[in-house]
Image (cartoon, rainbow, N blue to C red; front, side):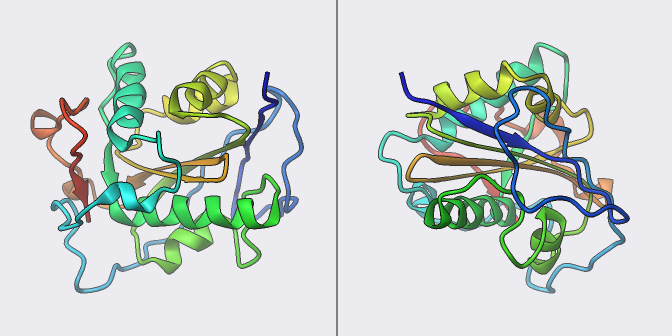
Length: 208
C-alpha cells in the first residue's frame, strides 16, 4: 500500500509559519487566511465562465478528472447543506503551479519559496477573504486523495468551510493540491441555482 503524506496549515498575516509541513496525521492546523482587498486585472471578469479549452491539460495524471474531483467535493458539501463550489481559473493555476513546485522539490509545503498561499493568489490578482489549502502526496487518483483528506478532521474542515465558493486542483507526479477561496465581493459569487455541482460529462465550467 502506498504511503500518503498530507498537509494543511494555518496562515495569519501576523504569524510566521514553518516552510514545510511534516507528516503529523490529523494534527495539522487549518489554513484560513484573511487579507486586504487586492484588485484583479482589468481583463478578469469575476463570476463569468472562462474560455479555456482542454482544462484537463492543466494536469499531468492521465486518470485524473476535474469533473470527478468536483463531484466528490460537492457531494460531500451537499451532505452538510453547504453551497457547492465551482472551478476558478486562477485557483486552478495556483494549485497546479504549487503541485509542480512540490513535485520538483519532493516536499509537502504551503510555501513555494516566494510566499504562502495568500501571497501566491494575491500575485494572480484574485480578490479574496478566506483561503484554504490541502496538500498531499502518494495517492494514485482523486478518490484516494479525497478519502485521505476526508479522514483527517483538519483537511475535512477545509473542504467543508461554509464560506468558500471557488476551487482549484493541481496534480504533479503524485503530489496533490486543493485550493479553496471565498471572493472579496459576494456579488461575484455564482448563483447557486446555476451551478452544476456534479457534471454529467467530463466537461466542466471554469470561471474567471
